[in-house]
Each structure stands twice: as C-alpha cells, then as structure tokens.
Length: 468
Image (cartoon, rainbow, N blue to C red):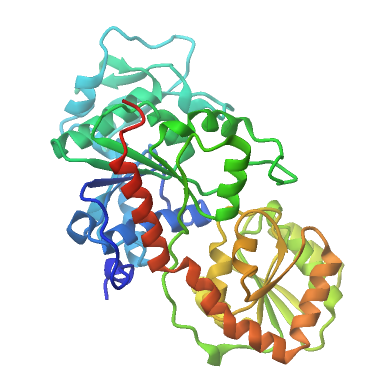
C-alpha cells in the first residue's frame, strides 16, 4: 500500500474540485516536531483523497536553503514514508534561479527597477550552485517580525547586476505564488496555510480564485496558559487578521472554543483533528513496569517533573526510559545522577522506531507545561498504551477525558507520582485503560479528520472570498 492510499479512508467524502496548495515556511527532517509531522500527514491525506490525481497537493516551502539541501530533505521524507511524490514539494528559492545565472524570469518580471537597496541595511546574497548571485535578502537581526519588513529584496540578472527589487518578503512570496498559480487558469484554488508567518503575508491575497484555509498548530497564549492569559504580540497581530481567512482550523475543540469565547465568531473557526495513521500494535512486546517519556527534551516539557514523580511512585520492579534529545539533556542527566536514580531512569536518546517504544511501554507519562496538538498522546493510545498526564492546554484533555489514561493537575508532581503508582499497581485498571485506548483514539482517525477537513474546505469555497 502506498503512502497516499494509506491515508485514504473507506467511503471518504469528496473534496471540492480545485487546485490545492499547502504552504509551509519550511519542512526539514528532524526539525519542528509535531508541526512537520502534521503538515506532511495533511498533504498525504489530501493525496489519498484524490487531490492532484492522487499525487497530492503542491507543497510549497519558503526557506532559503540550497537546492541540494532541499533535494536531500525530500529524499529523507520519502525514505521515512512521509512523502510519496517528492516532485510535488517545491521551494521558492529553488525556482528563483535561472539556468544560465541570475534570477528566474518570473522573478525579474516582478522586480521594480525603481526600488534600490538601503545602504544602511545588511544583505544576505544568495548564489546558485555555480556561485552566481540571483537574489539578496535584507537581514533583520533579532527581530521576530523580520518577515514583515518593507526593506527591498534585490534581484540580480545573469551578469550579477541588481536590476530591481521587490517590496519585502511579502512582495517576494506573493510573486512566486502568482507565478505558481498562473498555470491554473480559471480553476478554483484552495490554499492550506500551515504557518502563521505566511498567513500574515498572504492575508491580503485578493485573487478571486483563492480560498485560504489557515491551520493552527500551537498554543496562542503565554504562561500560565489559561484562556484569558496574555497573548504573545505575534498572536495579537495575527488575530487582527483572522477574519480575512476563509476558514481557520484548530486541532482541538477546547482551543477553538476558548478562541471564540475571547474573540467572537467574526472569523470562521472550525475543528479538524490532525490525521493519525492506523498502527499495528504489538502487545507481545509489552514490558511490565516500563514507564516511558517520549519527546523533545526542552524546558517546556518539564521532564524533570516526570522523573521526580516516577521516583516518588516507588513501584517495585518499575523503570523509566526517556526517549528524545534536546537542550535539557545534560541537565536531566545531572538530575538523574544527583537523585541516585541511574539504575532505574535512563536517557535513551533518539528513537527511529517510536512505535516500538510505545508497544514496549506499560504507560506513557507526559508532564508538559502546554501542548498544541496531542499527536503523541493519540499515537500512544493507538498502541494500547495508557497515558498519565498533566491536565494542560491544549488537546490532552480533549483526548483523555474520554478514557485511556489519567489526568492530574498541572505541575502537581505528587499527584503525578500517585497516578503512576495507582495505575502500575492495579493490573485490572491498567488492562482496562489499555483496552479502551484505541477506541478513544478513533476520534483522531483518518476518517474523522478527512470528514472535518472536507467540511471546512467546502464551507470556504461555497462562500464569497473574504479578501475581494
């Protein structure tokens, strides 16, 4: 079975007839965690539903890496089973180069010859494989709003001479999108924007053929992550633009409801769970007493809480494996040694087979401070592995309140330890949680996800465009 067909549920609803684009700032193996996984899964899902004749949507990226790097990334995704047709993955800067040097024709035609570089601005000159310049990007150091700059993007001809410029990254990105979509004639175009930064730059894209469905992958509030918490200024700006998108897609009902309660229903807010492919669980691999933590070792994951809770549970014969890498690795190793727990708690490193890790685990523990999309929790349940977790926004409660695990108050290490002890020392309860886990995960199935996505797109394309 191919990657596309693996994401094609039986009796799948028909997506509206259109050309489909998926926009992502970047897609690089090993970076951006659940975002990369979810974005590629959505593209495969669309392929399985027949988009592009089964080849899938055009998946457009905007990071200024080299063509060789991008080719290597695509090959890695194919080898991982994350992509079946690498030719559908295209990058702006790969296509901005003319075969004989300088910028591609579409880029030269879009450049304004009257716009010149600011002498006080530093530029990053981009060159082709032969070392010939084709474009230069303004460098905006230390500014999270770099993508909104109005500083010109310079365009070079085959001789390396600057022949004009575009008005900031907005002008550059839009020029490429206009070039790509010029091949579609009068066809309707559905744009699934997976990036907040890209969304801000295309929020005024007034092509009447285009409907923009903007997906969300992350938390929109700051600590303490309550519905009325302060928002990052980046999100504050985005919410002012939200009603310009033809649909805004949230991964969980809780986050969507919090947003609607706070900001109203001016925008079309809907819920589409990210697609999780079915798995073949190996119950024969299950190891009694094995507690697993699986994910990036970053401060927000609070893995130290999981370690302390596990040791406090003090279940005879139990042990903990922590799978993943990240900036907290040295600190966590020092904590394990300080607590004298090296014989029971192991930093196991990166796993190329997380499914096997989950098959082996008696329980999965997550002590994260916040979440955007509970992909890891759902995947654990699909493997029949109960989850013990802090009750944090967003998504974990949406899953575990239906069963398959235990929720405890966020930050309460004692309660987390009590829950680990209670589950591991009660075989009947552990078996019951494991048995119900796959049915709980069904709410995040391919069928449910595709049905919700189709409904969101259908609503967007049948309504008038919001930017015309």
